[in-house]
Image (cartoon, rainbow, N blue to C red; front, side):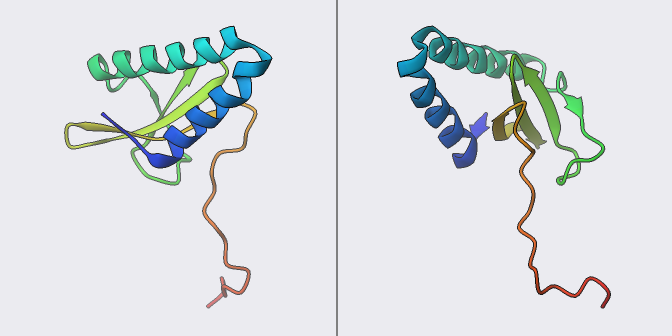
Length: 102
């Protein structure tokens, strides 16, 4: 199982944010994500497929207040992002000068 830099950074920053405010919430976040990773190792298809995903074949797993997005590449589960459920999904950068009508 691989955790992208983006997912790792989010998890680290979220735990750092939560720790002084609620140490138990920070602990729960790390434990919940760890448990989700263990379950995914045994049941990689447990996350819902996402018909609107930017990356075809990616899956979403809701874990408490958080959403984990991952792909299965060959036999490797690649967690591409973790975000709070209230956050908008990551969107690609849009070039303001791109000519969509061309």
